[in-house]
Image 1 (cartoon, one colour):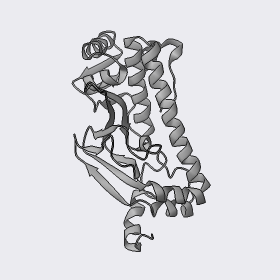
Image 2 (cartoon, helix red, strand yellow):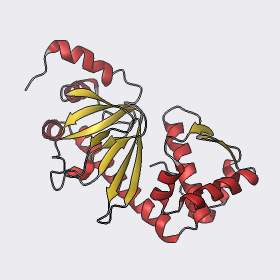
Image 3 (cartoon, one colour):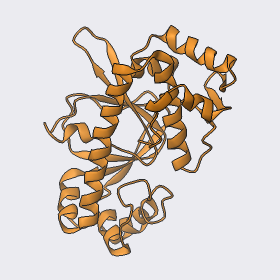
Image 4 (tube, helix red, strand yellow):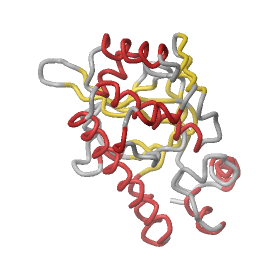
Length: 247
């Protein structure tokens, strides 16, 4: 179904002039191809801090490109334990978990007031079939998700507590830099308990490791504000296992 021209004019602000277009699905598309993608952006959706973008079991209908804000994805175990499986920031696409079973398998909740672009999946597939560059970008997004999951398995399976935390901070640093922000000074949108859940560590262990890094002059941390003082020494905590690639 065609989108009214009055709507398209406003949607082009979301894609053509968006400062995240080089991180999002439209990366590398021509002007004509970008226009086709713009036609499927159904709406922008705002989610307040603490609200869910979607819950496990919700029908899968759309992918969501994060425009502003920060989200976390979690799984709930049968005994009611919440496990954080990922953190998502501007320029990233969420909702891929629902493609296979046509229902979401996790909860994705805003850690701060967040805005996403809604991409109806059926329309996205139609456009991707006609736009090879977009289809390739979709494959890359899915591939990055697989690589991210492998990285998490490595963190949980073979790294000591301080190695896990160092890898996490360096990854955040790279992701912020890719979005034009400082790679050495940023705000942790998630709590220490949420970091621990993601890394498979207890809250006390996360707090202790952060204190050790601060005492050794690797970082400064005041509540949620973190500053990396020595990236090389923080990277050295990982030894040869560090990956310099942002996910």
